[in-house]
Structures are given as structure tokens and as C-alpha cells.
Image (tube, rainbow, N blue to C red):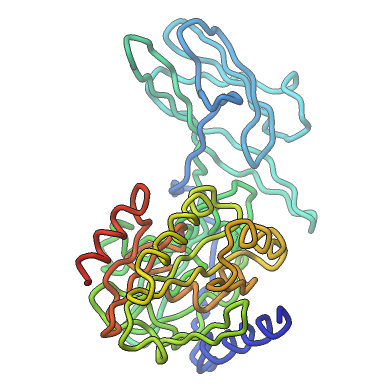
Length: 380
């Protein structure tokens, strides 16, 4: 049964994923060390997730997430001094101290050597702010990449500046950055700014540009390729995109055979704590509404986590209405629905479609799925 499900899922990717590869858009990317990225990481965080320096602390040493390099800060009156392992030899003794003025920013460069032997000195900005809570003051520090990879996206009579952010701070611009958030910015209205939800994307989602839909088919530090796709977004208030999948029990479910029925699609992953915590609620929904509402649980894990998903499905006894596709963010079904309502492929995600095939709800369900239940009641 699992082999059949995998085969059908891959076929769906081929049939619905890409179209007309001759119309691909090629974008040449160049490293820009003058532009600030969109992602920031808090510094000096303990195991309790409390970050920065509290009033009683004079100094602190920790490591920067993802970069895994040591960094130290200590007080100098109202200001601060930093040591950061800029040459990445896992030492601070050979580093020069950097002065950070209270409430301001300072730039540092961190050496990065790639497998090819190429060496870059990546510019970062470290900033300071003081926050007060319950009469206690804490000094917070953040590190932000002060570089992007930039280019111009041109298609037909449309042209816009784009910029890619290095979300995991490793000096590479690739698909893994999309896991950290909106790593692609497109100046759709050509106002010289990357503002608004429409201009912040991830390279894993469907990209709307010049009135057409595209998928990012390749990406590295020097090139980005967009390929036209006939995949469509699920949009609240509009007809649901055509889809089809196979449940674990072998039943084929499609948008066509669900016409005339209200139904919910629950998108979840085994690593998503709130998703798994809501599975009993989803099971309860299905039992409560019975024949009045169909419910389907769609797992969006990568292939490597299919066994974990299977164990969760067995634990919560939802086998009879579940599907495991094992395609992760490459799943065309997930791309169509995961981008609904500016969702950006985040989970949990619940889609409510009414008997007329119109998408009525696309969001995280609310506390104890209260919002989803309200929309179901309104649909009835």
C-alpha cells in the first residue's frame, strides 16, 4: 500500500507540478554586502530561552545558533565590548574586542570557507536594546546578516528587483533557507522597497509574478530559475483547486468526488507539536459531525519521517482518514493549500471547503480549533 501511495504522489508532482519548461526565467544573482537581511537571531540565550544580560550579569559567553561560533559580551559602563570568533577557529583569545554603544549597532565580519576553497568575509550587524519588565531591565543583543544575494526578475513586460536572505547564516543561498521563513523578496510594485506580505515569499512556495504562477526549480549563490506551473493557490472565497490523493486504506479522494459535501483538510507534520496535539480534536470533529462533514488528515512530512508519522497515526487511531505522501515541501498538494491566505507553508493548517466547492477557511484553527468550529457552524 505504501508503494502505491508513493507512486501516485510522484505522478501528481509530474502532472501538476511543472509546465512549459521553455518559458523558464533565469535570474543571475550577485552577493550584496550593503543590504540588511530580514532575519535576526537573539544572542546569549540560555537553556531556559532567556536571552541577553540581566541586571545582575556583568558578562556572558555563548554560541551563535547555526554558526556555532563562540561570542562573549561584557559591560563597559553604559556600553558593551564584544569578542566574536570571526576567523572560526573556535577561539576568542586571538580576537580583537569590538565596542558596541548602548542602543546602537556595530558591524563585524565572520570568515566563511566553502568546500570549493573559496573564502568570504560575511558582514553581520550586532545591535543592542534594553527592555524593562516588572521593573527589571535586560540588555538584549541581536545579530543580523548584513548581506543578501540580489538580482532582477524579468518576464514578458514585467521586471522587478529581488533579494534572497541567508536565513541560516551559512553563506549559502539555497532551498534550506526557506525553512527559516520568507527568504525571497520581490519588489512587485517597483517602489524600491520590499514591503507587505505580497513581496515576501519563500522559495518553496508558488510564486505569483506578472499574472502567472511559477515554482523555483533551482537555486544557488549565483543563479535562480523559475519554472511556470499550472498549480493554483487555494484562496478563501474562491473555488478549491483540483486535487487528488490516496488514503492509507486505499480510498481515492479528489475534489471532484467531494462535490456536494462539506469537508476539512488537516495538514500536519510529525515534528509539529500543536499539530499532533490537535489530532484528538480532529478525530472528535469527524465523530461529532459524522456524515455532515468529511475530514481528511494530510501528513506533509519528508520521506525520512514517514515512520514517525505512521506511529502517530496509529496512536491517535486516525488511519481510516489519513494520507502520508512523504514529499515534504515538494508536494504539489501542499504547495497549493499551504500557500492559502498568505500562509507560507506553515502548519498546523486547516482548510474548510463547503458543498459548493468554495474555500471558506484557511488558518491554524485557533485555540482548541475554536475558529475552525465557528466557520464550520457558519457554513452549515
